[in-house]
Image 1 (cartoon, rainbow, N blue to C red):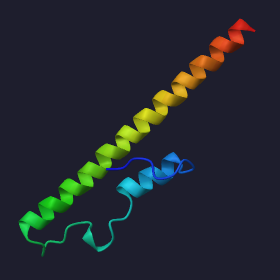
Image 2 (cartoon, rainbow, N blue to C red):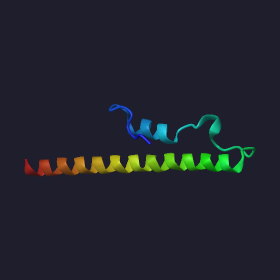
Image 3 (cartoon, one colour):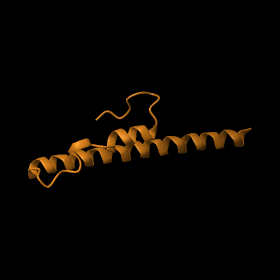
Length: 76
């Protein structure tokens, strides 16, 4: 699954894309065949997992940037 579509895409836009509306396919309807419903749930979970990874990477990036700025300020 591709994480970043454009350099200007915000974290919230990426999360929306990954876990946002699935249209008519989400939630799986009670009339769906079990294999189709399970496949839909798996796809949804995959999107949630990717969104969590995206958020964790962004937090790590921001933490590293903050640490770098604090170290720079202490050196000045």
